Every structure is written in structure tokens, then in C-alpha cells.
Length: 318
Image (cartoon, rainbow, N blue to C red; front, side):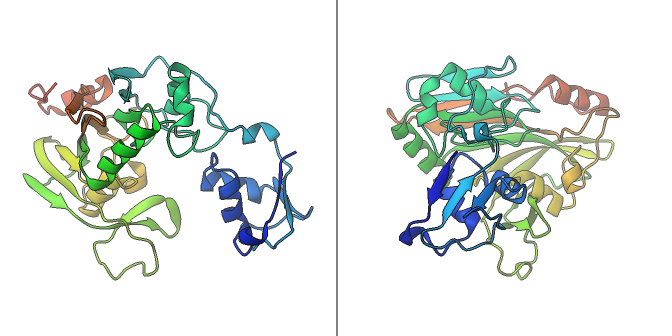
């Protein structure tokens, strides 16, 4: 049974913060769920996540011990395509419906599981075992290109490029309504106070005082339109959670099929997937400095959606 004594220099923080340090493979969301379920005890007493731990207290995990495994299980997936591979980096094409990383030890069908099955060394690269080598991430229902570092040196170099805006990331999206021919959306983003899995664009800067703000810039250009929808190419100069989804929702043009942000599906029975595909990714190679650029074709389901709407996409770069 796993347990941790609170050292003097670890005291004075919330229980969830203390456990984040001890269990980096678990997400904040997963820890919250486990604390609320009574999976942790402090000196044999159940405590809330906001409980302030004290020196000498013993924090014990009394739940399912298998959830504390420090490595994601290796499990390859047939839908993932390797687009580029060398000794320092990978670029893979993730299908819709697959989470990028584990989020928690309960996840076994993520891109992370696939990566460690084919490249076991990735377990020791990145921020945690549940994010093996992942430089960028995509939402579960977003398809497209993901950049992966194969060693710590490459991870440091590529994440630095990502944070400085040097990694080029371009997307195809179908949005509701009409848009200008081109534009830039530069609203900062914050977590929605009543729904932390959703982001809000700060159209009015004075709103949500006290919430952490992430600068976010999205450039876009219109590629076509029909039947009340617009097909756009979007480029993110930053990489904030749900950035494209929240930015277009703030313009009154949520993504088609994106129920979380108010979008509607253009095709009956197409399911909950939103129309967003990461089709282009480029970076500088961490060793040689040469540009590595890859593209991904529009997936069949999204191509069919455009066909039924009558939007011509035959000239898209491939």
C-alpha cells in the first residue's frame, strides 16, 4: 500500500497539490476524482482536496493499487499512421476518437499507449510517463499530426520551439455561419469558471478577474462556404487548450459538430465529432536545424461532409 509521510518542507499545501508532486502520472482531474471517492486517507481519515497537510502526517492510498502504475500499458493501435521517423523525433497522424495522452492510469486506448508499444524508450521522455515524448497534443475528436520527441535533448529543443511559436501548426475546420475572407483572433483564453473542461475567449478583458489567462493567437483564411457553413484554414501561433474551438465560438462561428461550444452538425447521424483536422506541422530538426514538414490528408468522414455540403476541397494541399 502506497503512503507518503509529509516532510516539514512539504507541509502547508493542499492535499491535491501534495499528491500531484507524489503522483505526476495522474492528472489533476483524476486526483480530484480519486480524493472525492475516498481513495486517499490522511492519518486514516478521509479529507477534502483543499485540506492543508501538516508535518508528520501520513497520506495513504487505499484505493485500487493498479491505478498508481507509473507507465502506460503498451498497446499499439491500427488507426495511427507514422508520417516521419528518425532517431530524434516522430510525427504521427492521430485518428479522431483517440485521446492523445493518458490523462490517468485508467486510460488504455490513447496515443500514449500506442507510442510506448512501438518505441518503449519514450516512457523516459517528456513531462510524465503518461505523456511519452509528446510535444503537442490534440483533443480526442480532433484528428491529425502530433509531434513526438524520442530523447530528452530533442524534447527540450522541440518544446522550446513550441513555446516560442516556431512550430507551425495548421488546421482545416468547418465553422457555422459566414466569416470574413481572412482574419486574426487574438483573444486571451481562460478556463470557464463553472466548467473547467471548457475555455472562454476574453472578448471583454475585464471579465473573469482572478482567472489565469493564456495569450492566444489564431490566423485564418476562408477556403469555401455553402449551406450556412464556412470551410477555413487556421494557423495557431500559440497552443492553448481548445484554442481554435474557443476562438471561433467567440466570433459566433463555432465548429460544426462541436456541442461544447455551441456548434451544430451539418450531417445527420455524423456523431459528436467536431470538424477539425491538424493537416500541417513543421519544426526545425533538434540536431541538424533543417526544417521537417509533414502533411496529412483530409480524413474520409470530413471529406464526405464537405461533399454533401457542396464545398469544393479538391485543391487542398496534399
